[in-house]
Amino acid sequence: MTTDKQEKVGKDVGDYQRVPSVEKTPLSEGNFDKMEAEKVPVKDTHMNNEMVGTSKVESRGSWGSQVDFLLACIGYAVGLGNIWRFPYLCYRNGGGAFLIPYFLMMVIVGMPLFFMELAFGQYAREGPITIWKAAPLFKGIGYAMVCISGIVTVYYNLVLAWALFFFFKSFTKDLPWKGCENIWNTDACGYANGTIGINSDNETVLISNISTIPAEEYWKNEVLQVSPGIDDMGSMRWQLAACLFLAWVIVYCCIFKGVKSSGKVVYFTATFPYVVLTILLIRGLTLEGAWDGIYFYLKPNWETLKDAKVWNDAATQIFYSLGPAWGGILTFASFNKFHHNCYRCVTFLGVYIDSGMGILSNAL
Image (cartoon, rainbow, N blue to C red; front, side):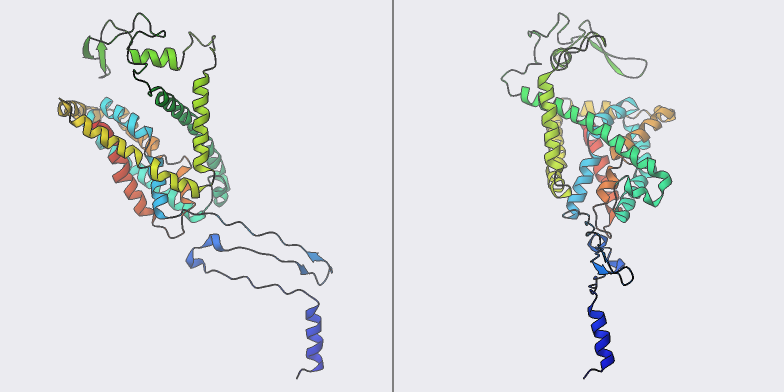
């Protein structure tokens, strides 16, 4: 049985809307993406009007599984820098001796930076620009990361367009870059039959009267159609333009749903290079003189370790391969769960994947 005073208080309270309670998630769980701030219309007792609240804060997505994230990092760390650039640097800088500064730079420079970006992105769950709210003075670093990634994306897609062009042209009985009887070939075209020599920069050169081989003339005169100079811009290569458009379409199809789509695409893009290189390695090792070639290629020249340029190339290759300070690692990690073991991921990527890909490319 209620009193008159209790009835009056109940009536006064009923004039106002009650604010529903918001379920709180402990910070220790790390589920920051599940914590949603919600405001509902309430009555202001002094102004006697409604204050309209804001909408829900959209939660940030996350990887479907830890395997998705790991494969995405593998695909990011393993690319043209491992397959093309690393074997060239290894040969130019003393063969097997180059592996010493390379591994040292990976342990001293590459892996700490890789781990720092992963931990920073995973903790803050922000992109390269907004993450620097933690230190506004360094916000320019975020913009630089985005600019660098944009430039790299443009020229990497151009390389992909060239690959697509050659892929389509390979569906012929006779490859167009095989011989010298095509309209784009010159009188200097032919297969070199000269001798091999070493120049002053310790680089292998071919001593021959033949200036260009068929593949080179096909590349310059047919694919690129290089003009005589900068004053002659040449005509539009519609075939290359179409391949470039197709490359951008492929990229869009991979990322248009964010990590939900890209997390599945990496199952192919991250593993396919290893399958191809393994096939080529098996084929190469079965050729006559394969072991002699590998020994000649990897034979260490210890004198090169005295050259500072060799150590500089090793450090540059680490940044070119692992990609720290480009913003990609930070972005990948921002979609991780808060308690994901990123240290284990760094060790696996740095030691087993990146180094293994480089050494495998060397053997080819």
